[in-house]
Image 1 (cartoon, one colour):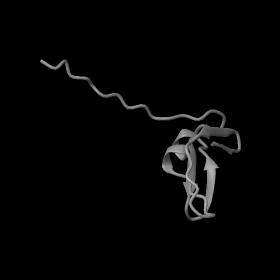
Image 2 (image 1 turned 180 degrees about the vertical axis):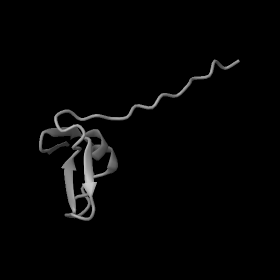
Image 3 (image 1 turned 30 degrees about the vertical axis):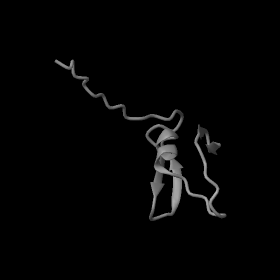
Image 4 (image 1 turned 90 degrees about the vertical axis):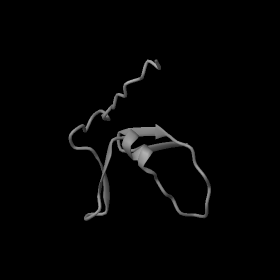
Length: 65
């Protein structure tokens, strides 16, 4: 399923369970969206309004001695 929000989009898997829609954290992070619980709004991250950004973590691979 392609999910679109303002100038962002991503592809995710979906399950049909009743008539409620639930969007998980992975699509929100993929599109770099920000939740504002007080205002009950989802918005594009104001720190990167034009292009989604993400934090990339690196892990060290052991040599397996």
